[in-house]
Amino acid sequence: MSTAENTILGLKMPTDPRWTDLASMSLKEILTDHAFCEQKAATQCISLIQLYPNREELVTALSPIVTEEWGHFRMVWAEMQKRGYVLGKQRKDEYVNLLLQHEPKQVPGDDRLMHKLLLCALIEARSCERFRLLSEGLEDEAMRKFYYKFMVSEAGHYRLFLDLANAYFDADKVKAAWQWWLDVETQVLLALTPRGDRMH
Image (cartoon, rainbow, N blue to C red):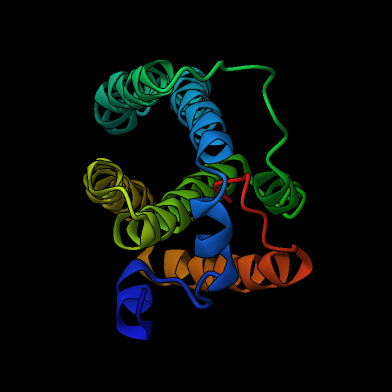
């Protein structure tokens, strides 16, 4: 993904070029990890709805995303079955876990929601970038098209979470917090070694 495209997504650091080559050699592992990522995305939306049931706009916006994310899991699982792959045990997402370690705890309740929404936006943006790389870098044309669809969907989710944050909070406050998260993610990526068996 070019610098301009990263800017559109708001990301400060592009994925290490080695990741695409590694992932293309570990498609089974990438599909498996992708399946679990879609499960977690659906679960996260459910969790936000449960935590903030009185936020009508949030509940209305995220309810269909739960269905969509689970539909994505089913798509990935169907692709795995077609290839004779098994799901296996869920893996830890080191990238997400490191980001979560930075989630501010000593902030007002409302600000916690802002940070949760921005963290979701960040993960969706990074996933979108990775799907773009797969849609361009895989040799299998069918799999390139497969991941192009996911790229488009993740871009929409990224915008949705940012829009929700701006709907509930002052724009300048959201902008400052978003820049802070982008800096955190840059440090997290620098601390991680590219792995071809993980989406993140």
